[in-house]
Image 1 (spheres, rainbow, N blue to C red):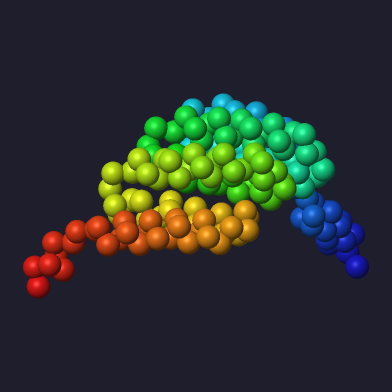
Image 2: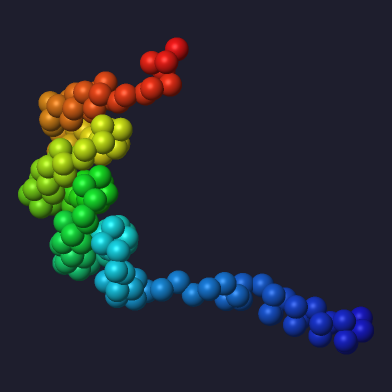
Length: 167
């Protein structure tokens, strides 16, 4: 066999297979620092929640709790009630997955308060149904979930659609 062909095959096999050609994944610590720098509190809360899940997965429960506490602060900073409710639900659910129900319950309550602040009936439905599903699943409280579903149904009934009424 020609030595040039053999050399090319060895080079291709060495360089082309299994090389780190893709972008390097940030460490969890780097992801945490990057999340803290986000100016939008919705994004900050969501990213910190993701980081907390990763921290918990690798066994760093204390760091996960710190990340979730910071995510909760960010979620409470959200000015739009619908976005605030959704962010609070996401953080509360993450606390539940870490088996920190005592930390989750006040966030679910704050999410319910935020949902009550939503003026537009159409915008109330998604946070209320999410709240119903989360409280039913994580808090094992189907009565509370049913209460939130009832509020979502009431909001749905309040939606005025001029196109349908015109027919």
